[in-house]
Image (tube, rainbow, N blue to C red):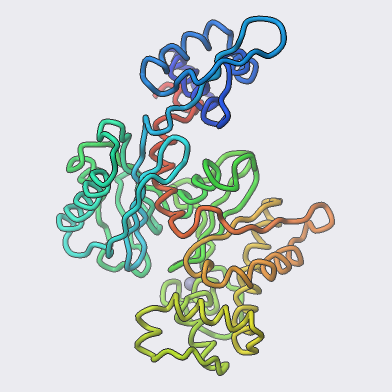
Length: 408
Ligand SMILES: [Zn+2]
């Protein structure tokens, strides 16, 4: 059943709508144009803009004269008035970024993934956030909070990780409440691929796209989906577990799901490097060097493939086939036309794999003929996870959401 509207919050909602209108107009926008776009009355726009000016969220940038009538003052976002910290927890590494209202990355920090007891983990994350905040010139008061992007499954209601694959020590670690206490700011927890998809929609290539899938190929594999302009969260905030779709027939057993030939097991960097080794690819690196820096080895493999090495090409082709088959199924089910791909492993092979994956997806897309599917690299680079966390916290602070009007 539809719930009622909480009229006291309508003002907040209108403010969020207008702020969003200004945010999405990097060249600036006038009050008249805002009223036209939001369908709000000129009086409401004027009142809200006054509030935003008083809060320092926007500034009057310049006056333009456009035909007869009163000159118009162009409003521009005060980009650094609000900032969000994003944290991506990934096996081995924790990446932190600061993102401003305009979606610009203001600061970045990487640290080894904390380990130990829950208290030790909270202490290390707190320290890293404080170091990051102190590393730039912006006031702490401008920070709206911290958004954590973590591998699923996560327990959103209680702000804790459940049993993230490849992160044994992080089983049942509670993050949101203790971290919020120690940092004295709001903290959110999202599944990494959901957060990345929000970043893609907010500040990446997904801006203006209402239907797309974001595929992450890093330590794990997952997807995020945007349907009719809405990011799919699922019942528990864990939507997008496609890493364990079965796509191959080589009989490699997955340590996480126990199935053979799931996407995650066949796109695991270790497995790919072993395949390349068996296909006779000479990395010019010792086993210990490869183990220490699999990303460098994967990059080398991609370079060799591009230069025509047969064994290396076989492996890249396999990546494309399996990833493309899995994404192609999803694209057909949801009838999507755009795919973004990102993540460390993808980054290492994307130069060659992008076109191949695009071919496979378009071949596997059962709606082919109705429309084609565009496949693109994420423009947000390998810090897309942390950027996602930051976008989630900024988004929760400012984005207009009809749900905020519902009675609770
Ligand atoms: Zn699996």
